[in-house]
Length: 111
Image (cartoon, rainbow, N blue to C red; front, side, top):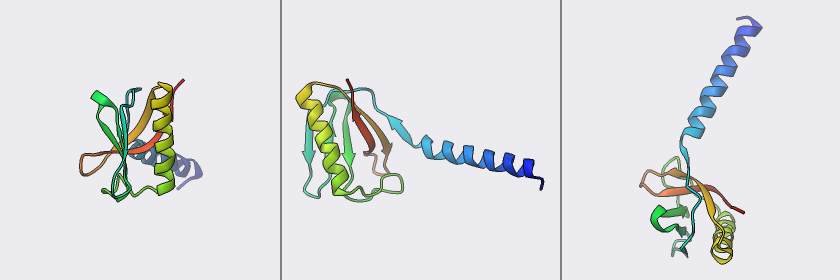
C-alpha cells in the first residue's frame, strides 16, 4: 500500500470513528432549571421542567452512560444550582442510556 493510500484510509477511519462517537450525544435546548436532587445512591437529578430530567449517574447504565465520579456530579450540582440562583439558562450535552434516562455528558451555564 502506498503512503498516500494509507493516509487516505486512516483519514476515513478517523472520520468514521468520530462520527460514531459523536452520534450518541444529544444537545438539550437552553433550559431553565426547576429542581436539582441528589438521590440516595449518589446520583444527580436535574429537572428542566417541560424538557424533562437529566441524570448524573452514580451507577453504570449501559455503554453510553458510564459511572461518573462523585466529584464530577458535585461540579454539575454546583453549575445547576448556579443556574437556579442566577436565573441563567443551562445547556446540557447528554447520552440516552439503555434505561432511557438522559445521562449527562457535559453542561455549562449560559450568559
